[in-house]
Length: 112
Length: 115
Image (cartoon, rainbow over all chains, first blue to last red; front, side):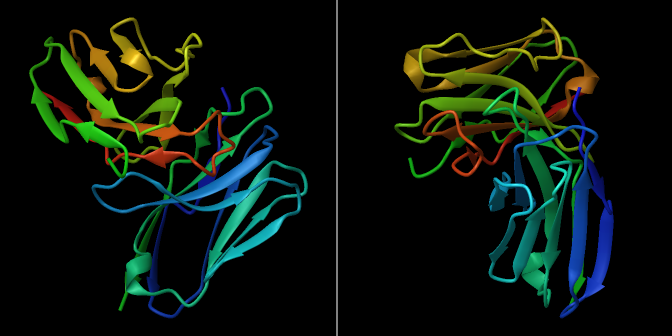
């Protein structure tokens, strides 16, 4: 089946630092999504990307849909303690307009 | 309710027992999804319901897993003869229609532990 390779698995950073994480796949996806999950909660959508090359910002978050449609990255600028959590990438391929394939997540820890 | 509601939030069961997990989607949402999240893993698609259409069951890992959605609203995921590898968080989500992802809302999950 389709797989998304997400890296890094975990990150420990100081408050104020910028963060970057990415996902790659051997398959093409038509939509890329980035979610954040807090402990005991379900994933919450951060950014959705629908076009190859698209660069979208949401506050301190910026994400890009790779030109090849096989990768995406998420940047967080000027991190704050509440950025702590697990970040997941997810993709939707052309075979289905509803089935999300998820990466394994990046655990982010921010030291104040 | 305001969001997707799942129950129980935590369930500990003995190996071999059956369990039922319930999902109450957001009112008016026609699409309902079940995902499984194992420790340290991403979310794994299980099953998808859309209106009165036949569900997409392609993600169910074995015939011990089944799900139904009554009246186009509440859904129940049933796991028969539970095994230890079934221990995971089971997440339900709903959306207004077959979605491109931007309107899928997740519940808080049901944490299942099989001992």
